Length: 332
Image (tube, rainbow, N blue to C red):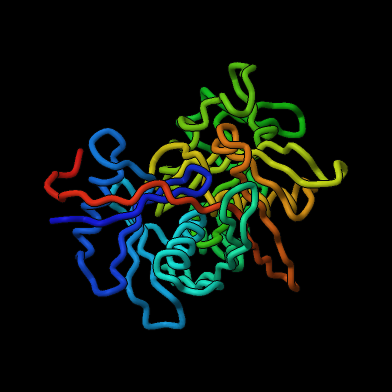
């Protein structure tokens, strides 16, 4: 079977886009298998996700189905929404704003024009949900109706790695202070300054073992559908006249620290503004920015009464257009 695809990227979060707008081509099972095959970076094209675009009966230009390298389906992907909007605007000749249906609702994306040599888009990421039942987060001492923001959880597998301290300076080994929320995807936000390592770590934010810690937290029983784990370093607060943070995200489904995560950067931008006095809007520097300084994200938060709504802006870039034969088995 011939597969036509576009490969796109936004802040090095890369995607294989397959267009089924003229009619379904693949079943759910085939989409899952294709994701396991195509996302592999040694035996295939390589990507963080495969995006299938299908016809939508609602008031939207298209519906986006997101399949991860492990074959699971994600609810939402912030960087992918910009890439899909760029595809629909330039290849399918649809007019901005683009309305894109996802499993977490319809997202509206506006084309902003050229910035730093790339096409930039602004995504309405929707309203945040903080209650534990929406994350979801569960446990004996966790009230599903309450928010879990700036509180500690114990991770037995991390007892030899990290700790927190109580008011008397007594160590609580394996404990981590985190903030949980859902912005279309479940996220835990951890500030780097809150991490205390049992073995002093001197290299800094970009070099500590985020993948090991993120993997343990992601798959812990507290999180029944797993959770994306974000580590944040504050670079500039309001006192500096602007807001800037650095973010590293361990993504569920991808099961590694990726170069960028749109929903994760959005969650980190909001939590940094709420609890660390970071200015709004906030510039988010990701691993991608280290390699290409012009690729970064901006998070703007609007508060109305008790609701927080976020807007994410960033680049969307075509990489390749291709055709391949589907003749392989998924790589285990």
